[in-house]
Image (cartoon, rainbow, N blue to C red; front, side, top):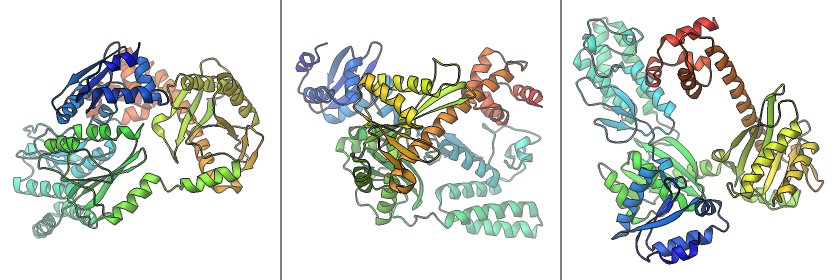
Length: 562
C-alpha cells in the first residue's frame, strides 16, 4: 500500500484517525492536525519497531473529523475501549485496579470491586489485587462484618461466625449499635483517620468489661491495636493531601504513588514502550480507576486530559506540580532503582571499551534430565529489568540433553523476531555459559547479521567473555557484576521457573486424569487457573463457584493424594 499518497488525502483538521486491521482497528489516535500527525507516524516507522508494525499490519486508514480537541479525545477513548486495538496502550491500563467498597445498607459489609460506579464508600485502589483481598480478610477477622451477600435470615449462623469472621447479623447475634461501631472501626482502618473511633472503642471495652463479656473485650482490644498501629503512620506521613495520586516520570518510567489520609500507602512503577505513550497511560488509568482529590505530577498534563479526568471525578480534582521535598527523594529512589547510569557509562568505557548498552538481552537454558527443555530471554533496559519484555521458549527440536542445540534454537527464534522488527533491537546479548555458549551465539549473530555485541558469563569463576577475546573477572568489578550478574541470575531464575511450571503441570495432569469427576473441560479450567494441586486444594468455595467447579472435587483430589 502506498501510505504516503493515502496520507496526502488526510484533512488538516482536528479529529481521530484509525489504522484498520483485517478484522478490527490496530491503532487509534487523535490529533489537532490529522495529516501532520500521520506524516509523523510515517517518518517514525523507519526506526521505531512499534510504528513499523502499525504500518506493516494495517490494511487501511480512515479518519473522523471533530469540532475540537476535547471531542477528539473523548471519541478516541471511547473507540479504544470499545475495539481494544493491538497497538494502543490505553486499554491495557483501563481494566481497573481492585478497590474495597464499604456498602451502604442496614448491615454494611466490605467487598472487593473494580471500577467506580458503586453505591457506598470506596477505598483504594490497591495496586496489588492480593493486598485488597488480604485487607478484606483482616477486616472480617477484626470487625466481624458480615460475609454473606445479600444478607440472609437464619436461625443458626453459618461457619464463618464460628471461624470468627462474622458477627452473624443474619441470626440476630449482634445489636445494630454494636455492628455500627464495627463499621466505623473498619472505615477508620481503611481511611487511616482513627481519631474519632478510638475513644468509642475504649468506652465499649470498658462497658463490656463491667458486664464481664471478656470475649467481646478481646475483640475490641484487637481492633484498638490495629487502629493504633495505623495511627502511627508510614515512613512518609504528614503529607498535605487527604487523597492524592502522585505521578513521577523519568524517561519512559513512571512511578505512581498513592497518598491516602496524609500517608503514602502504595506505589507502582510502570515502564512505557515510548515516552509518547504517557497521555494514553494516564487516560487508561483513570478510565476505570478512582479519581482522588489531587493529582500531582512532575510533568505537564494537557488541558483536554485535565478536563476529561475532572469530569470523571465525583467531587472535583485539583492538579498540582508543586511536589513536597520528601516525596521527590522517595520518587527518584524508586524510579531510578538506585543505579547511576553515569557511573555505569564510565565503567563500560574503561573496562570493556564499549558504550553503555541501552538494551541487554540475557539468555539461559533449563531442563530436567533432558526433559521439558526451555529457554528464557530477559531484558535489561536503561538501568533496570523490564519484565514486560521477558520471553520464554519451549524448545521444539530436541528431546535429549544438548545445551548448545537448545541455545541455538532459542537464539535463532529470537533473531528472527528482531530482524522482522517485532522486538526492539538490543545492543548486547548476554549468554549464561562459557566460551562454547559464546560461540553458538556468535554463529547466530553472523547468520542473521545482527548489529549487536555478544558476551557470555561463566558461573563458577564469574568470568565475562567477550567476542573480541576479553576476559573480565567480574568479582573484581562490582559495578559490572551488578549489571551482568543480575541479568544472568534473572535469566536463570526465569528459565528454571518455566521448567518447574511445565513439570508441575505434568504432575497435575497425571493426578487429575485419575480423579473421578474430572472431565476434559474441568481439567482445562484447573490447568489455567491453578499453579499446582495444593493451590487448588486450598482454594475457597467462592473462587471454585466462580470457575464452575464443584467443591467435592477438592475432596476427591485430597483422597487421591492421601
